[in-house]
Length: 74
Image (cartoon, rainbow, N blue to C red; front, side, top):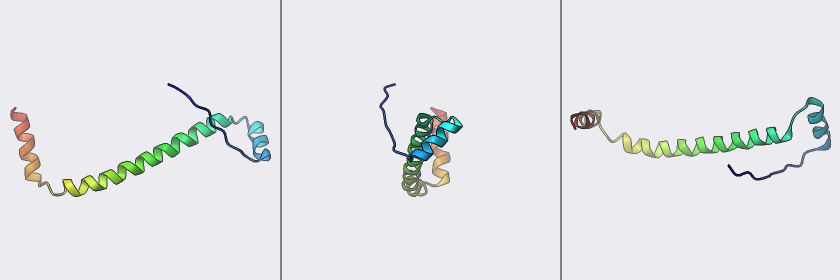
């Protein structure tokens, strides 16, 4: 895996508190970025699901059952 470096400016007082509590900025930033990306990915997936739902809702239960039975017979 290839890495890249990012940075963030924070108030000096906050940095001092991070030192006091032993908080590593790299861990916090990494986790925050990961969570934000995951949140956006989930949002995108939900949008896709909405568009697929309208298509799938047009397929009857009987058609699905018939298709499954045909596949099992093969």
